[in-house]
Length: 259
Image 1 (tube, rainbow, N blue to C red):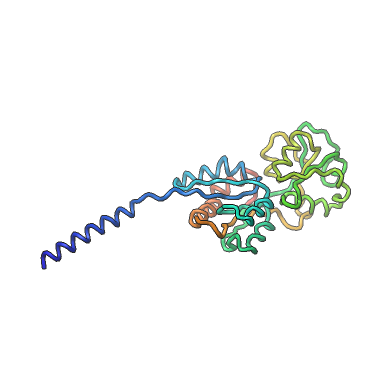
Image 2 (image 1 turned 45 degrees about the vertical axis):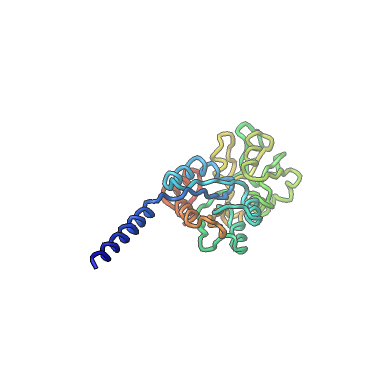
């Protein structure tokens, strides 16, 4: 009987040690991808991603940045990404409807503003949306794929100036491109987000577009892609973006936090 007890104790010790070894096994390194609007790139790359990776040292984050419309199309075509941060609810809603983004994970996190800008050294008679047709060249995002362009078209249409400027519009593939055209003076004025204007020392804001000219406010939702293989890490990233420290960073970049 004593011999049997001794054998059982040895087995218990061996399996106990094995269990302890499993508990101490380091977490596997993981890389996750977030597809985010171009207007978020600087804030993510310079501040938020390094901060997240410091908090979760076993997780690396890769950012893919472009217009939200283009990112939507890429996700529909199978882009390998774990989270999506859109510059408008339209693209997010479409992906939720297609069950490509988990509806329960979506959070309307940020609000931006549309602004009319000119280059610092550009001379223009344009004072605001009301006389934007006085410009020789106007840069906006392509309304087909760029949310900032969609908002711009709505604002200009509601201001009764859209039809009058058709031969003066230059369409950019994203807001970063529109901003660069205005900075260089190749476009006399342009419509971008306030955060884009705030990131550049080469432009001047002529007017902040009133929300009354828009059908909906400029809302940025974030959500988890349904097919992610890293659900826990993607959830942690989305939760991290909602933390007070992250919200403070967004505020410093010119965003307003949704209530």
